[in-house]
Amino acid sequence: MQSVKETVASKVIILDFGSQYTQLIARRIREMNVYAEIIPYFESVDNIRKANPSAIILSGGPSSIYEENSPQISNEIFNLGVPVLGVCYGLCVIVNAFNGKIEGSPFKEFGHAEINVKSKSRLFSNTPPCQTVWMSHGDKVVSMPDGFELTASSANAEFAAIENSSKNIYGIQFHPEVHHSVEGKKILSNFLFEICGLEADWNMKNFLATEMESIRRTVKDGTVLLALSGGVDSSVAAKIIQNAIGDKLYCVFVDNGLLRKDERAQVEKRYRDQMNLNVITVDAADRFLEKLAGVTDPEQKRKIIGREFIEVFMEEAGKVGRFDFFAQGTLYPDVIESVSTKGPSDTIKSHHNRVPEVLKLIESGQVVEPLKELFKDEVRALGIELGMSEELVYRHPFPGPGLAIRVIGEITRERLDILREADDIIVNEIKNAGLYRKLWQVFAIFLPVQSVGVMGDKRTYENVITVRAVESVDAMTADWADLPKDVLRKISNRIINEVKGVNRVVYDISSKPPSTIEWE
Image (cartoon, rainbow, N blue to C red; front, side):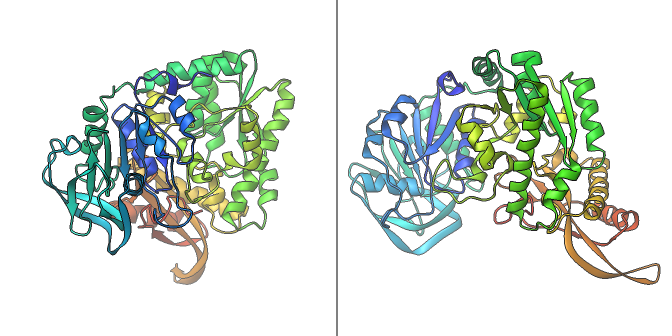
């Protein structure tokens, strides 16, 4: 099957050694209109050669190269005739391959550091001789590899950057993909365009044309049943598939009892009246809530919801009469966070669209996921390219498991009702303040604790609502939003006065990492 990876002239392959920042490398490269794809470090050299990369980047990782069973690659990688950039652990891989030496450092570097550029290097072209970078390492180069020269140092890493310009192999101890590396984007740009001579040919217009052709080749005369949630991801997926195969697309919208206030009515109106989609609505609220009764573990919640979704879809497929493919709006972060398929990364959380039942369908080739290699902002750009309304395209993300993972602990109808009302107030006040588009997400969380309060001169013992608002570009990292006090005051007053059962509102000031955006 033809893919976008076969049609772009420039393609960077990132070998993932398990860094928390690997996705950011891909994101930064795509921001410069160059296609980047992440594959596990253990991919065979033959497969990498067949992929015909224009450049290779070796990511960071949590291991030490000198440890037993540390991630290793074949030295044949360096004989493929394409430039190589090693980042952090990737630097160690290069040093190890060319007979240098790595040891644990008595002085570790985590966070901001200053490097000094020691010699002329195309990698540091048009950047200052002293610059702030982001370090995250406990090892250091103690012996220079054969044929390399020093290009930059820091206080605790003498060999902070090295290179063999004749072989086009570059290694850096710091992370240029993290925005705290002030010149990081320029350094990556130098690697892509000055050293590798790549073309900036990755954009949503090209992606759209290629993906639609891929869908037609896959589906042929078959029918597609798409899981429609009401959010931007499934909406953009539906629009692409509809444009590709027309009325052979059937959309199933499941009211699982875990939706936001008035969500069902809004979704039905939007998709039938505005997008002319063939939408089948299933009222399965009782069914889902019965399955979730008494469940408090967040992973178990996600798995139950994922399994139940599949069962509902299969039942609806039978009613349609013919069902050849299942489709969903899976994004790149969903795939990475669910399970370590790209490298030795820790599983952060399971996603409802990556439960075993879905994975079996994927393995059998029965799943269409047109967005699975895209980040959220790329999906939004794609939505604009498709002519979709900005109101829908810039709608805040809503988790597949819905309010199930925003009710901490046991899910009950009463808790869901309280959460819906509080969440509606929060979102409306943020919109009234003109802050909605500035935030990545804003929502309410129901906490399974009660606290003492005084309302109308009487003692109360009621529930707590947390307000969560974050700023982000791609959800891989996020900062808590410093909302104006008057907005927070209005939100708190309205929730306590208007939502029965709540007497306390708190604000979450945690960033990702170490926290996640959602609480469960």
